[in-house]
Picture 1 (tube, rainbow, N blue to C red):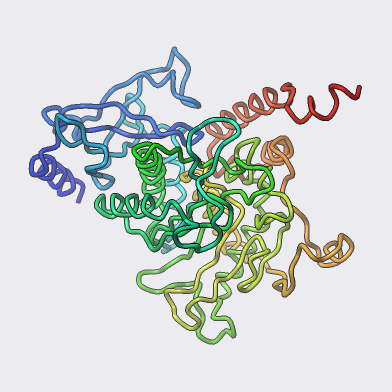
Picture 2: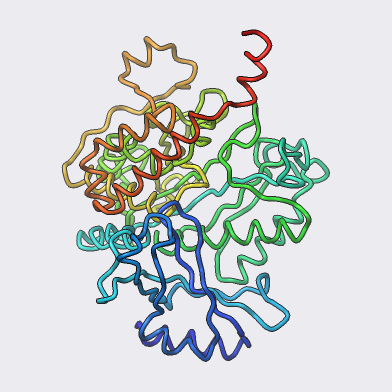
Length: 444
């Protein structure tokens, strides 16, 4: 299969008149990196990989251990007219990162996801994911940002000034082979959403990386600025990355039970229980920035409390009810992640937590049938409902103590991530903000 994929890539490069190929990968924070080769070099690179210095990549290696190999994955190949230059089309291929001896590099996020997917595969499972990617358009990256419109949820023009730009984006993604379920204006002013059609988790993680890039590129071509910052505007909803997920064995959705009132299987319930058990430990992964926790506050549609429910959007995990009784439609939706996370690590953590719930047969509390935000503190305490970390430092301290997370990510990446996030917190907490100056400068 690998050789067949290589030949397919080489044929498409020639057929499409591609002149440059970007070899792509991410650092531990999910920032897309690349370097460019010509088609003449591609055949040998597909066979042998391409050597590079990994010491400058966040979370990779020290200078004295810097030699690394980028090995293209021909199954993760994209061509887009959007990123073409005057000299010809540009293609993109995602790479796996290897040690000089050919072993997988243990600090590479894509490898961490593949490692956890391999564990699921040994149990007979395929992990399917469907993301809802939210973001904002602004007129420029100026501060404070200036929005395009005062539109709301599902608004169409004229309140939704960005519908044409979203359509351009969806058209480009579809041409690249990335299927889009739908797109629309979200609840906040200038906020958008593009939902990618569900498929296997590795493909979706690659697709999210490409989608974020294309969304930004098309915005710039329209003299706009797109941001995946979780909470760019005070007193507006922040942007989430709601993750719909399910496990299949062959063609069978193991989350589906035709005998259950809500069609939810015991395996699905144990999977949910695993997520709820470990969610606070992997919130550092799904919500990795100081700004992430400005979104995770009551009153702005983002989940704060650890609860699950059928249909109810106030809960951390909900069971969508769009297609009752339809096997393919049964899934769970985790609502806490934000679109600035590293999708490879986020999917790896979710899968690992869910699989542990299945393997250890965790029991699941009853679903919440009322709005969690409208319950008082005593009611939530009585119901056993706790909450997510309230800031980055709290998330770091919880993650740092987690042997489960260390095992899921591997020691190298785990310690690098903790180190990086501690540095971010120290930089943040030493800042004097405009809020403090307005509040205290003339008063104290």
